[in-house]
Image (tube, rainbow, N blue to C red; front, side):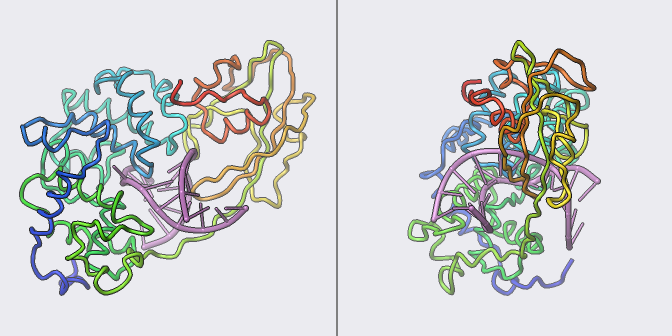
Amino acid sequence: MPASPPTASKSPCPQPLLGQKLLDWYDRHHRDLPWRTTPAAHAKGERADPYRVWLSEIMLQQTTVEAVKAYFRKFTERWPTITELSAADPDDIMKAWAGLGYYSRARNLKKCADLVVAAHQGKFPESEAALKALPGIGDYTAAAIASIAFDIPAAVVDGNVERVISRVFTVETPLPAAKPEIRELVAATMPEARAGDFAQAMMDLGATICTPKRPVCLHCPLRDDCLALRQTDPERYPLKAPKKERPSRQGAAFVAQRSDGAVLLRKRPSSGLLAEMAEVPTTAWTAKQDGDTSTNSAPFAAAWRFSGQVKHVFTHFELRLDVYHASVPDMVIQNGWWTPITEIHEEALPTVMKKAIEAAIPSATKRSIKQA
DNA sequence: TATACGTGGCA
DNA sequence: TTGCCAAGTAT
């Protein structure tokens, strides 16, 4: 524990006033989102459902609000309570999550639901530490659930909060090293009451006013307190460590179709990229130069015809897949099964696989998540 | 502390 | 087109 953080001199004392300004702004400008209760309802004693708070927070990790909305509705309609989610077939959860990305979240979702049902009588534990002990719940999510669902004064620090705080206090330490410093500043800024509203207010401010590019400082409730606005350029914050460049990989994907139109799928290994999701047979994905993407590397002999190339960008590499198609006789493969082309959208297919199938069989996967 | 882990939207 | 970004976690 450093005796004196670099920016300590800039915030010698707690700033409850700042927190109150933020809450006043939130009362008038909060976003209405499917997983929220309004601050007015909250003031009347209404509590947010911890299950819905948890589910939304997991979905929102590194994911936009707009992308989450349809999935959140789908999950809560199908599994209204954590008990029902825990009773679900894990494959059905993976299918329902398909397209949202970061699939370990879906696997941990089931593990967490099972634990809460088995070890906590179906109720989320009401402390930050106990929440953080659950699968898929880290520092941020534990604090978010504790504050939003239980009004526990926990320091919620996500990307929005990092941006708001680093600007208001001109934090000169680059992320992620600045995290502890930012957490201290949040703790000093938090009001005594309304922990959940304060956390959501910080995030709404970061999402709508204190945006990464072209923040709307004119409308900001903290404009008189913001050191970045006063001294320099707010967009300079938060400082970030330089990122590495994204390598390229390439491979081939093989879309086999039976005479009745069914497509051959198989299940991916239980660890690593896209773990336990469905795929069409592919080669290994290797560094661009030495990848063999010819039909020589097909999973079995067939009249493979080149359909086209698919590009897909993952977080840590970009992939170019040569896609081949063939009409084949009925057969059985390891970990594989046949799916009617009309039901392909119900499988646990990650987006990259939908792209590959679409390249081989145009219009095969057109049906969108909202209709599914 | 650094790396693996998805996807879609936007300038 | 390319790069950045969006309510992070696990190891």
